[in-house]
Length: 193
Image 1 (spheres, rainbow, N blue to C red):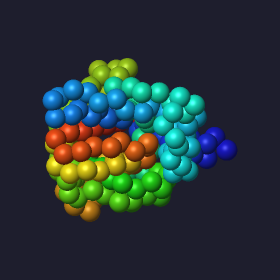
Image 2 (spheres, rainbow, N blue to C red; image 1 turned 90 degrees about the horizontal axis):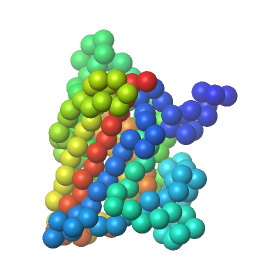
Image 3 (cartoon, rainbow, N blue to C red; image 1 turned 180 degrees about the vertical axis):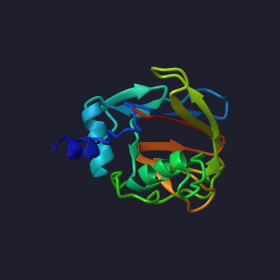
Image 4 (tube, rainbow, N blue to C red; image 1 turned 135 degrees about the vertical axis):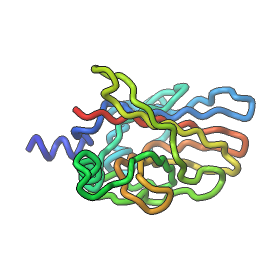
């Protein structure tokens, strides 16, 4: 029962509460307000793919959107391969965003609808280690895209290749509307518990 609940809520050995953050800036480099759902509303968005109204009943306006990732089954297998070198798995250093709205699930192997245009195509992130509870215990990936079109971004993920590759983690969230001239910064932190 506990194992099933952990999978349902995206609590895995490689996750943190609210370990993903998105910040959007306009063409004047001013931070745009984003809708941060309350935790219970976030659950509906993440696991059921429900898009809720953006009002005070379901959340609030914030300078960033924060949420917890969900590590996939192939992501766990890929991490195990990285640890013991069994399959020479490539490092998970690519970030991607998309417009898919189906709730994230441990069986996912790709983003539902990855964006490949408008300056938001999958890209190599700046990888580092940061401290959460112990020195250098958390892997951090950061990527800032310069938007050249109009999109409603609703999903993000970590992969290990510039195309195709293994999906380590994925999550869906309330739509973030971006337009040409905006920048979208995605920060992913993954900690082995």
